[in-house]
Image 1 (cartoon, rainbow, N blue to C red):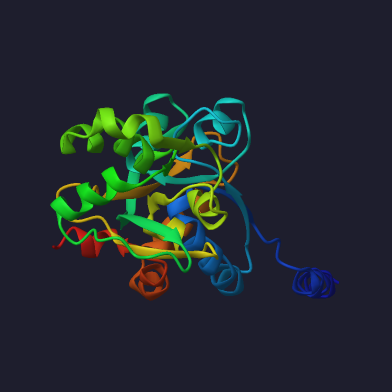
Image 2 (spheres, one colour):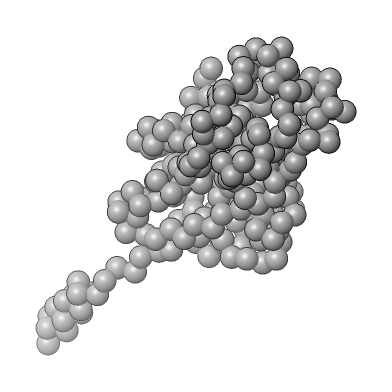
Length: 257
């Protein structure tokens, strides 16, 4: 009788489907395309489901990651600019340690078909900025840097202020593609997927600001173990080719340079 009961239990367990885990990942713009490309691969390999939520690393718009978490929106993992993730750790919303995933450069775009301006040197870049009728940048890491530091460092803050526009929440490339803005600046990985624009190139050395984007486990996560496993998977060399394809450099490679 005992053998029959045990056999019956084993049959029932074998017939029951394994409960797949679900992870909610909040990711900022620079890692958005990489996460979109990699999520289906991860799901196929692990049978777990990834729920992607998109928002900026910093800022005060309703969709910004800090605002979402502060309002109690549920998530397991945050991927955002390192400065933004560190701020979330300081606020007690993300648990240390934080893991750098990628390094990202800022790039410039114009409307598809427009003449490509020269940004090959700092002098040429400065001349292009001064000649532009309108300039757009994001309300996240790259845009805040351009508005608060880059213009000042180039000595053109006063000339650029009247014609520069910070675009909240939406991809800057859309404003350029629509002809609303002549020049658009954002992380290269955020510009690449936008149709209707031509990427002129990354900023020259000097004005360029390379940013690390990092991952951190949300303190209120219902599945911190799953979030840590996903971080380990994203930092595995087997994912590097897909990451590079989006315009990002894996952090371990960037730190070796």
